[in-house]
Amino acid sequence: MKPISELLRSLAAGEISIEQAEQSLASREIEAIDGATVDRGRKARCGFGEVIYGEGKPADLIVRVAEKLLELSPSVLVTRLAADVFAQIQVPHWQMHYSPQARTLRIARTAEALAVVDESSTALRPIAVVTAGSTDAAVAEEVAETLTWMRVPFRVLTDIGVAGPQRLLASLPALEGCAAAVVVAGMEGALPSVVAGHVPYPVIAVPTSVGYGASLGGITALLSMLTSCASNVSVVNIDAGFKGGYVAGLIACGQQAPPQSDGE
Image (cartoon, rainbow, N blue to C red; front, side, top):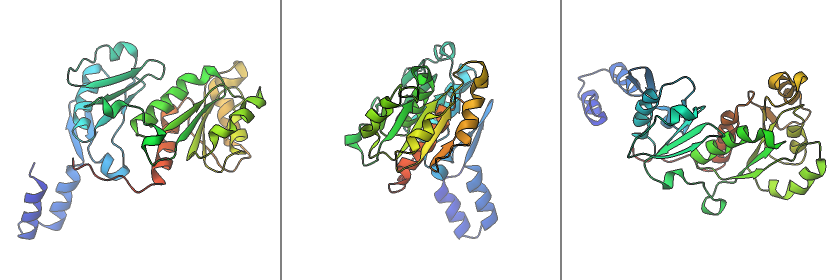
């Protein structure tokens, strides 16, 4: 593949047409490898690189895709990665952090790129990560791991569901000054509406599959959240901690200047 500078010289010299140059530039955004097509242009278009959905993928494919993505970004996120597959991923020059609870893997070239961002070290406002019950912790951990990968600070508030409303009232000071909240809840899924009635920012509701029979594997919570009376609630899919965290991270980053290119 020709360098972009050579491509531009060919265009300026009239050796290729604008359409040919456009096609050449578009082809640079993807790279086909055995078993996958890597989106090399995702970071330039969207601010963050491609995330690897690990469920069902063999370890060797995850390694090869991650190697390509690390050419473009300082870190890579893998979601829904089983512990036995992670055990097969052994790359000496990688720094890695695996969360068995969230089933996420963060891969980086340096240990610094894996560190959790402290509120005092960034201009970004934090995200509140709120759980209704401790059984929602795995999904909330996926939210937190996603925000860590995005380099967005967060505050975790656990087990403050509506069965004990005084717990939420005691936690209200920690919700102040945030860019958004991700509220993770199962059962009847009421907590996002209650939180949303106390805060002046978006609430991303994540229904979980926690609950007894009539919770229908999270469908009851999902429908409850979708019919919330609170105007600032948006909803993602059941157990989709990554999606909730990603949307919240974009909100936090969108309140600052757009991310600058790292020259890669």
